[in-house]
Image (cartoon, rainbow, N blue to C red; front, side):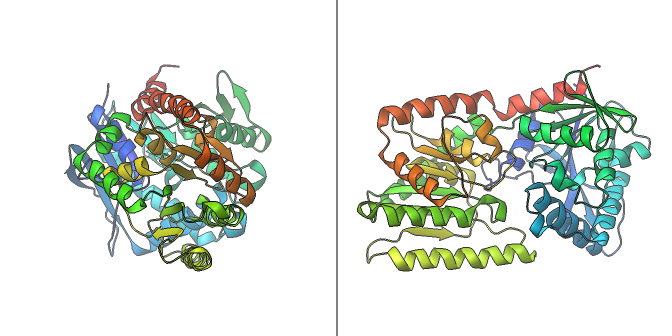
Length: 458
């Protein structure tokens, strides 16, 4: 195949393939680039006084990366502003948190044009370009304006918002129109794609074209559903590694024969962390006989702490965890262990394996790879139980999990009890079905399906 160029806001190819944060995007893209001899382009995370459209080339564990610095104003308006204060909350149906500021939109347009200006000279005639996520929606349009005619695909890692909410965005039509400069636009789930299609047909006057194609704005776009997965074998290797096994032993010992519930989520209002703690508190209230027999390990790495909304949720979560511990703890038992730190992927695998229950309860999520990692980490002979929000993209596939409405603390409380008392035979049956799904949606399948669709002749 031709060379693959992957483009994302941050180039986070890990220098140590065994390392990884709670999110799975970096590992997924690194796995993709190890199959195809490619290039990963994006923002370096650094700032410069004056923007220069020249990329710095590096090698990271066999992955070639091209990095570009941005001006402070770009970072503030494009990244902290439009990406994180406008599109992110809007795409997660939090209109109440969405900032509609014209300067943010102007910075978003300007910075994407700068990305295009820097990337264009690196593109060879037969390269295939794969652009990722909401930070760079208009990038194909800007590349086309510079004369790039290569095949360009786009994959959205977040949900797509309902039409009635998207129209609250100033210049929403211009944003969607820019997506029609892609040859292929992919979504995690049929639901997200159907919401996108509804906007195109109802708001932009578009028409369906063939199998998941859309005609609008005088152009034709091919859509598709491509549910992302994890690097299954890589994760199993991490689980079985020396550090993975040592972490499992450490967690098993610290549990002191208590059942551990685990949640691993980046600090974000979309993850339903407050609702999760309230649901767990309801469980403690409703099941006096189980107090002292269980505990919740909540691992929550801090993110976007320069954004006011994230500072607020951090304070609320710390206060809530402290209140629950103060109300229910005993001299030899603490119901919640709340940690604001990042663990390596092999450590997380050991933590997951030691947990009787995995809590993945976002209020709205594109996919959520933690759900798949938790399943992959389990002992086949004595697996834990996955409790999964029906509003996570993963719920469309993982029907054998205990699906819950995360807004209902009573429903979450009941699911926790059901998981803890579930017979071994049922746990094994559910895990086997879920593990088959995890294997069937391996990141390599996601990668190959998307690239094949992008390069297919039409």
